[in-house]
Image (cartoon, rainbow, N blue to C red; front, side, top):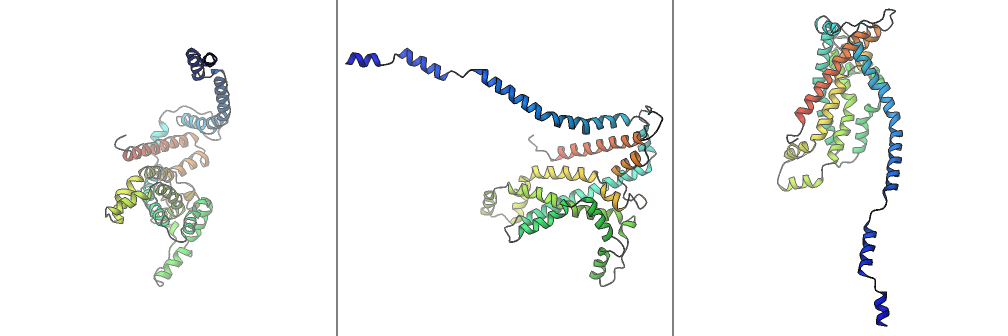
Amino acid sequence: MGAKLASREPDSSTVEGAAVTAAAPPPKTKRRSHSRAEQRAGTAFAVPGIVLLLVFVIGPAVVSLVLAFTNARLISPTPPEFIGLENFRRAFTEDATFHRSLLNTLLFACIVVPLQGGLGLVLALLVNQKLAGRNFFRTVFFLPVITSMVVVSLLWRFLYQEDGLVNSALSMLTGGAWAGQAWLANPSTALGAIVVMSVWQGVGFHMIIWLAGLQTIPEEVYEAGALDGTTPWQRFWHLTLPLLKPTFVFVLITITIAAMSLFVQVNIMTGGGPVGSTSTIVLQIVQKGFQQQQMGYGAALSLVFFCIVLTLALVQRRLTRDKDS
């Protein structure tokens, strides 16, 4: 009986062989086939996006870069000629309208970026409180964002008229002392009026971005701060703002790019007037390239605009990046 049991016991070499067999990896043939199939599927999904990127982004950018050094016109029987840096020399030394447009664009950005970003943060802090009806206010503040900029510009153009709602409201608040004025027809107030409308239309978008950043801050952080005896202002300054730094960088760059691209509001509300007080770089690019058919010069202005925006974005990223990075 003992001999039979002993004969049934597996040999140690057999056990080790079985363990090695069990631990051995499966054949790589199937893995390679699956990997190749996944690569082919990924390539098939990426091809349409790559084609669209080449046709509508990279292709036009290359064409614009080439045209910037020529005297090409939109509709002309004469073929374009290479003129080197002549378009850029003209822009920076002769074109007073471009100088005014550049100044207006930078001034608009300097006002809108801190105003819209700061107001968006204030609204985000307000609607982030655990109060009744906060969802209603979130919706109200965000409604202008989903409204077409063309519609908003047309609406505010009527509001800014001499007999519009803005002047009527100011006259009522001042007891009739405010006589009213045509805000968009006055060179000293036209750009400021567009600033107010632009901030009103876009602040809800950045409110949502700030709100998303606030949602990532754990409640335990504020509880720990409260236990340490800090005031609400101290918690905001030393806890909320440092933890919102990634959101701050994103908001800063997006607002700057949008502000530098000012076009629709100006094109609809003032057309760049009065007396060029609201003319912008993008408006000049469109007018020179399409209305005046100076495609080469318009392409040169677009290249200058690209370099300015890229420089501002890099400077902002440099100033706001983490010290340890």
